Length: 209
Image (cartoon, rainbow, N blue to C red):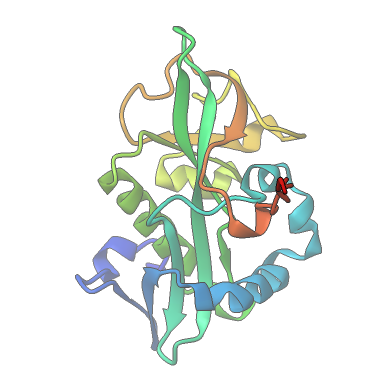
């Protein structure tokens, strides 16, 4: 049985995962991870990652509170990353906005593939999102991989990305049954704004003599 198929058995209470002769931990992302994370994403996904439709929902935003994770090797090296983002998944039948999470990017250092790191990050992210009370997770990815975690396209038929997307890769997982029932419309960003995206607006002051 591969590490990817045996994640739950290999998870111990402190978040330590074993994969063959190696070990890694899943921890909350910290600010110091930023450069290493960007370098890892470039190695794993290439420069084209910045042109994906999902990036439009992440640009200028911070990940959802408590839902950005790093996989670290025994020596502290960054081996993998995943983030979840606050979005609105259209509206329900009554016209009320449907809050959800967007997952991605999920990436593992090419030198550390086949250790089950991606699966470990997915299980951890889904579990934490459920614990925090979120209702659903949406992503764009290969169903051949993400179906093992419960994702499918049944609840995204009425939804649209802010850009091109292959419908077969537009997937969702309900953490609360029925959360996406009747959801229709465009996915939009609803997360906290990044300080980098905030422009300082000059204020003109007039003083009287």
